[in-house]
Image (cartoon, rainbow over all chains, first blue to last red; front, side, top):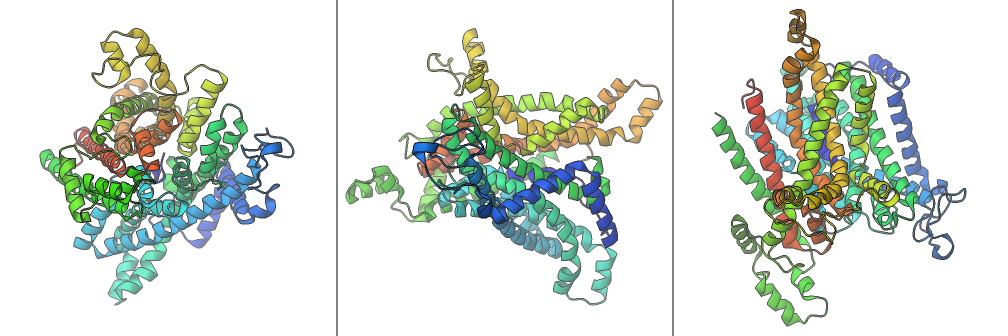
Length: 304
Length: 335
């Protein structure tokens, strides 16, 4: 399953809060969000753990994630020394998963930064300008959405050459249209609101209006979408790596690890089990957290 | 009205496909690797490489190459595969039915299981079945399809030995005579019962794994749609006038609750097509996804471009079909 495809589910959900929640209310909601909803709490904890591993990974790995020892440590099952066993070159799977966290989250951050910046600019322009500009920009956006995202990403990264940088370019290309759409929809509804009209009638310049009044109100929606998409960006990256397109060995990227683990699936269950669990937990946690944020900021969508 | 919509969508489709073909063409020609060199092999002489360049039209200017390429494409001629040395269209005709068989059964499974599950979970909110369906929707979105495939293969083939590890049929079994290209149907048409059973056995793991993601989407959409509909006044009216609950759900609620699920079909087709790439690799399924990945690994441009285009065409047309079905289901919609 692909990332941008799945964000569609969120796009189909009722659009986000119309009235901007006030600070105090937001804080109350967030408290309710973490304390009352166990699923949200689990999501937040898992996300925190992965962020911690990504930041401080090299001080936490019990072994050197790249240290090869084919003679003594090839495909050892989990033990106290190697919590998650070792791989075909005798490297510690646990240490490699920890280092893989950073790669995954780094890719997600880079991909989503480009996607969000570009998508937001396109969405703001299309939504605010309207008319022909809107039509052209949105048809262009639709064109990118007219393909299954992962297939498009595969085609792009295959054409550019097989490495992680090109995978990031490919993924940014498939993620931005969702943000363009999301931002445009928000701008269209904001544009008609009283406070924007008031500012406009007071003679505020267009650029200032967009920066001061429109953009800040779009940010909440974007943040929710980013939270969900981090998981899907990680998933898409590993999917491409699994196919041999993204990260290349000896990188401890989870999809790359799973691609090599595949050759040993009869003898070494641990080798392909643990990277998959790490990947699933990441997607799950960011998804739950994003969903939870959406509900917290908009109680109406809680019925899902 | 509907005809005009279809024409408009078809025109947009043509533009989209032209755009994609231009994009993949440009991208694949930006790469420094010389395909003629790749075909000829590393030890070929400069004159051999040149001959191949001329043979494949690689010596001509890029816009010219693109026009030549598109002239072929409209006649379903995608050029020759650099790796198999056969026309790409022949390869596609050979591999596409395998993917269609896989995707079709996965879609049927996810719909036939997802709709009842979604309905049951909405009608009996917070019951056991509701919890099951919510676990499925959450895990279906989070579980990487290729990892699920690996684990299923490990468990049901490696450990339990219940099911085969992959491929459509073992080498010992001859493929049924090709009519539809779908082995299950061809085997039945030819009356080869044992081939049919073997083909089904080979389908079980890939289909279930592939269906899992879209099962999650269907369940989630149907549940949400049903919950919303059940809250409507006309449902209350139907109940108040004495209709039994099952009848209300079947006759009044279901049809309306399914509408949002129908819109999600487009999304599911995307999931299934993308998933097919990964599932086919794990299960050595000789479909178009596996063909495309092999083409990528061998830098086989013609094959890469053709598969991307074919998948895009399938996706765009199935989406168009969904929209048209939706139009008939929901008379309120006008475009």
